[in-house]
Length: 385
Image 1 (cartoon, one colour):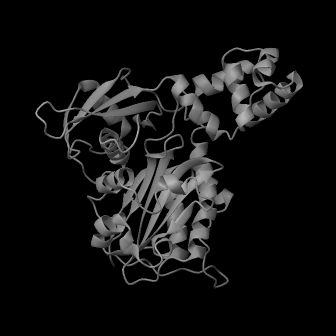
Image 2: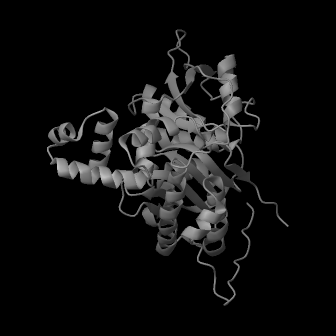
Image 3: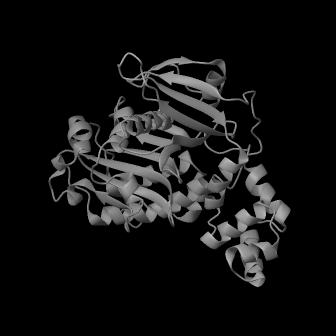
């Protein structure tokens, strides 16, 4: 493994905290650049040897983009996500998303016996890691990203303070990732695909067939080569996770659907849905992935979450989208018309609109096509000097 850079110090001679202030996140930009900046800054105080940062769909905690992967050897991503969905283990992202702290370290969680973790035994230990720190990047109840930090075997394990540091940073990073869903990039012009495409993978996750429409969607998802079988390209992490979830559902260990929302380099939302097929010969079945342009009703929920609406504000917004008048909303939600107006006022302020029409347009039209995920992906392997 490659050793980390030595810690740097601030002008006063004290180590940098690794915490990015809101202004720093803003200057770093949204998405992958913010993840890269956070990794660089936190690496100066936490001194981790490798890291994985993934944006997630807040509805499913499935990985999307942006992605930042540093010093992780190629070939681990598919196993990484298959283990996440197909096994029961400590520090699962779905469990951390519901936990009070939102993070933890392997050594501490297993009382100093990391081999109790199947993930450690089969995936991390063979690659030379001794401890890893996992955390979800969340705002309120919504998880917008996840992170894994690794230290090599023989290094000091992560401390509780390290976990607190990442959790504190996670709030700002989650806000940065959520902000992607509220600031569409109108400079991106959609390309030609407009219908569903289909891709077939074999039981090992190797791409074996696709149609022309799917090829165009994959080209729009990433400009980097995706044609090779399962490989190191980090943008394919959502697809690997999707395949793993489809296999898990097929085996009866989870319930469907296996789907994830992504946005292309042109800023359009896609829905990727996977299904494990039944092979008539009895051999392990193929996995079909359908890539379709998302409709506005599929995207509105994620943008609603991104704006930080309360549960009652979400109910009111949904009723407005259905065309209900204030009196009808009040009757349906068993609240007063005055309370409906108060909720609408709060919603208008959060979305920076002034009318019901603008509200519906912003949720169901403005965010239907413009830009989010796609280009903010980075995979770094530092070279020893």
